[in-house]
Length: 254
Image 1 (spheres, one colour):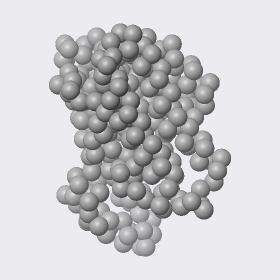
Image 2 (cartoon, helix red, strand yellow):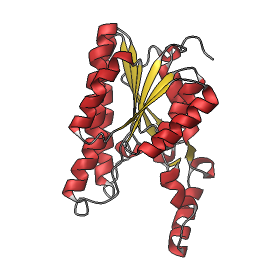
Image 3 (cartoon, one colour):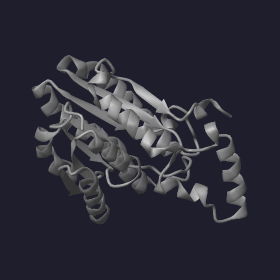
Image 4 (tube, one colour):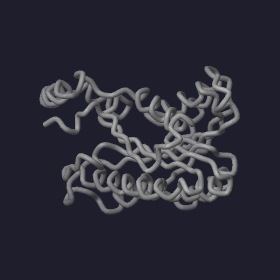
């Protein structure tokens, strides 16, 4: 256990599954206490049990819907105990401008973009006072490799990239760092259908896509988590306002 992080606490949104859980697990291995946020209480309980059993750390869970302002407000008192905030919640489905459904799009935007902004605001309120803290935003490669067929994701991720860079340039005046990670295609529960397509058409399309990926594979959630742990540490103390892409260079391949 790293004594540097032994008494630190990280709040991870989207922390019960996928990249969020991988980050929570990596932080737990470094001795962080954890506060996990997700919509599904059952998956949160399972994540909590797994982390306590493996790492014997303190884990608090908060089953909340971060697309709702009132649920975000429930987290505000928690930030007095938080040293690291990892915003990893939210996803916006595929679809072009004529295919997105306005209400669903607004809900997804609130769950990904507005939750990141408002939770960062709550964190900064406390972190600026303490003159210490790190905010890590898990964003996505579509904000850099723009995609009109997934217009909502592209717009949301581009907004969060800009937010992270702007806030991170100022937050250092208060000894708080704000950084981001753009995962490329990463193996999680959400991408399992790519590995197990149900039709020949999908199988051929996915095989061709995977063959064009660096190393012929998706990224691993643990690879995103390893970077997050580094960015949370004092080893990255001169990194702020930066968004790092982790896709093996796939965004430059066509």
